[in-house]
Image (cartoon, rainbow, N blue to C red; front, side, top):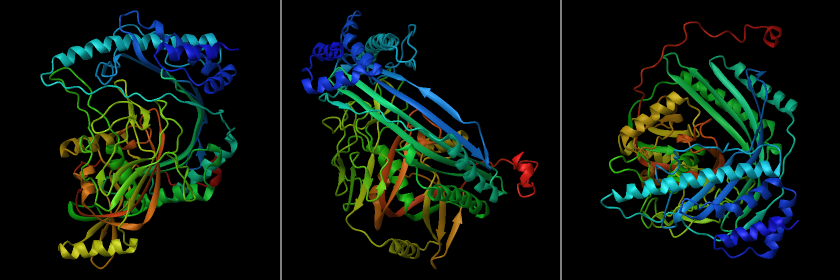
Length: 602
């Protein structure tokens, strides 16, 4: 019964760490007696001392497992698709050789191994201790061989660089123990099937919408993490989401799309049906209105982001650039195109107006009465996050960091939230709060927009009420947006398009337009915010590491919440559509209204 405790203490001593406190070690030991995954992970981590036969000892190692099961059901126009069940146990193993100042990570060679891979990358679903240990053993073996090969390639590449002053590759942090009991609820397949069928039937009342789907997905599992620094984590990892996507083709051929997502960290406590119905109805109404709206044109002038649209741009643009990253090492003359943050090396510089602050706080579970989506106990590197003040009085004070050192910061702050490439994790915001110490009533923002329009002699201003973030567009749309971003030079990062954009005329009249998109909008644009509203708006979204967090992109998701006021920019640039539009279908769609109920249900 004491074998796990012995392995835990031994593994810490092997890597030069102080043994865990007896109470914590006993807690891990007690959990491991009834949890084969935890026991196998600790025992194989303890054997990592054998991974030194190639001449380079391991100075750091970790492993993580997402033991998850998912249920999903989708429906279109009141008809359900077959429900989908999945059981997944992906394994991620990280091994570092060399030393913290220079190791095998952050190189284009970090993930490449020229030999034969024998590990499966996933655990068996049955808790056979030897089968689990066998998988971990093979994963560590492959990770060590990959690391050894990558270190040599990286060293050779650095020797070929004339002006090479590499940063350190690893930040240390104390090990900690966090053990929670797994939690999983039974999902009612029949109830959710009936619910998504009812929700999807909303689109039957909008014949102009040619494609639509409503999907519910619940993922429930347990996150395991252990490393050679003494950290052991076992925590529930659950989320439920309702995703709505729809599109249509306007009479002139322009393809229009919109979507919405409603999330909950407890799949058994999704928002009320009235909230879900409102999300579906809003997508249908938006598309119906957009089909009738005129096409927008090029514009330079004041722009007001109202309500959720403001939180969307803060999350998409500011949140992304506050997440620190480094360009990976590559061979001389073969630099990899890599989007670097606009805030790289700008700690101490003004990035917002003097009267705005930004904080990120994953320890909060609610914002008033609203649940927050970005709450978590430990990140993917086993670090326990705390509140971080990112911008104070408009001046950048900190970035969101992982264990990878970045300029201007002194250590990690537990924001490794997504798997990344080249041996490092991706930092992402959690609960991002944007506050304005100077504000005006929201209604006055529109008045100030109209005043700017008159003073500048513009025929109208622009009001944005919804952005396409996370994007509901197709892969083709993503390619077009990415191409435009590369031509505009906006850090090479594509920016989502407005969904609800309105011309605001001097008399206060609003007119919805379609097809416009921003040009040159970047994190640097936020320095020129002219005014902010007094009311804050919360926007929840799922980040997957894909550009514009496009729905269906990536293979890992994390919840984020942004709380921000409406903001007014004095001068931004938009452009109209310049793409060739496809012809509408030759034959019109079948008429939903013409089909009798009996025929529809057959």
